[in-house]
Structures are given as C-alpha cells and as structure tokens.
Length: 107
Length: 107
DNA sequence: TTACTTTATTGCAATATTACGATAAATGAA
DNA sequence: TTCATTTATCGTAATATTGCAATAAAGTAA
Image 1 (cartoon, protein in one colour):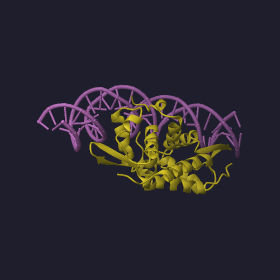
Image 2 (image 1 turned 30 degrees about the horizontal axis):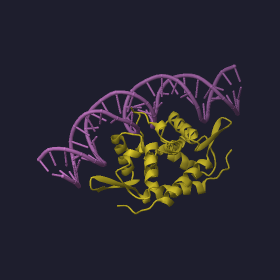
Image 3 (image 1 turned 45 degrees about the horizontal axis):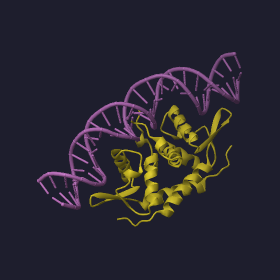
Image 4 (image 1 turned 90 degrees about the vertical axis):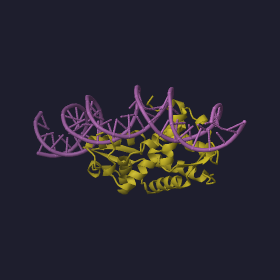
C-alpha cells in the first residue's frame, strides 16, 4: 500500500488527475504564469525567476513537459520554453463543463 | 529538503496549487464527477462507487472538503456531500483566463 | 583543442501522500 | 439501554515527491 491504485480508475480519471497533478505545486503554477506573462517563449531565465536551485527547477520543467503543459526546444546554448495551448484548452473546457453542470441545490 | 517551500511563493501561487492538488488524484476526480453526474447531493453511497476502502475514501473526501471543492452536511446517520460551485467557478475562470492569454507563437 | 554557458541527470535525505486494518464516534432504531 | 449503520480517526507500512549538491551532457566561442 502507499501507491495510487491507478489501474482501478478509468483512463479519463487518470488523465485528468495527471494533468492537474502537474500543476499541483506552487513552483509549477508560477512557471506557467510566468510563461503566460511574457507572452512568448522564454529562453533561459526561468531559473532566475524562481526561489529554487537549478536542478529543482529543471525537475519541475520536466514534469510540466511530460504532462504536455509546456514545450521546450533547443535554441543554441539555451532552451526555449513555451505553453502548450492544447493542454490549457483541455483544462478550460473541463472546468467549463463541470461548472455549467453543477447545481447548487444542496441539503 | 523534501518539503515544498511554500513560503517562497506568493499566496496566489500557493492557493491555486492547493486547489489543483486537491484534484490531483483519480479517486478525487472520480468523486467530483460522480457528484456532478447525480446532479444533487449524495447521502452515503460514495464509498460503494469507488474501488477503495472506506477509510481511504473518507480521507479523500476530507481533502476535497478542506480545499473547498465539496461540502458535507450531516443527514441522520449518513452525510450528504455536494459540490461547491464557488471552487469550480474559480477553476473555470482561472483556466479561461490562462487560455485567453496564451499566444501560440513559439520558437 | 580548451574554456565557458546552460540544462539535464544522478544520488540521496527529508518530507508528503496513499492505502487500509482497527477502532472510535455519532446517530437512529428497537 | 443495546444493536446496527455510517463516517471519522488513529496508527503504520509502502510509495511518491521535493530539493539540492555534485556531476554530466550539450552546445557556443575563442
């Protein structure tokens, strides 16, 4: 025991939770909002904008990339990161759907 | 080392990541969607709809409640759970804002 | 080539999460 | 009261996450 019983849940539930898990850390929320704020891809200065060591930031970036939330492409000696619109659209649509269906007639 | 350095991030980043963290598990996504599906509050049969033991479900419900995503009220010998519209609106607006701002002009 | 810059990976310690058996608490019914 | 039902909590084991120093890898520049 201790590990999430992923195999007991549907693909949909696992996919959504994986996407949300990628954003379930303040550093990763901060990275996403930073990429959004500069309105373009960022080459190389993400580490300087976070209060964490370089290996830690690299680890967070990898998690965001694995989840499909950001993309990275090699640009000379640096790497350019940018947001993946597809993932954000998916999240927007998901919560839009949830919110539109919710009825506030609770006991 | 090991613990998230919450104090290094803004309140906003911590609040958003906490809300998303509450949904970063397939069981909790499943609970939210189940509450949505029945379109009303559920009294007592959440445990039967999940492939987890009762103490585990109770733990997940508490996390959702602490995050403000669901509400629970005592109804006789059972407890009625329902979704909190406020949290879902917050999430919908957040991703709506992100998606509307994202520019897909990446390198 | 060497030196430099930037990012990734490795290895590990500290902490957090997940899951569940056992048990407690709370309520209703008999 | 006692019994049954339902949910919460405690305790603990297994696993996952977080963070960083050290180091590697990959590229540019001289």
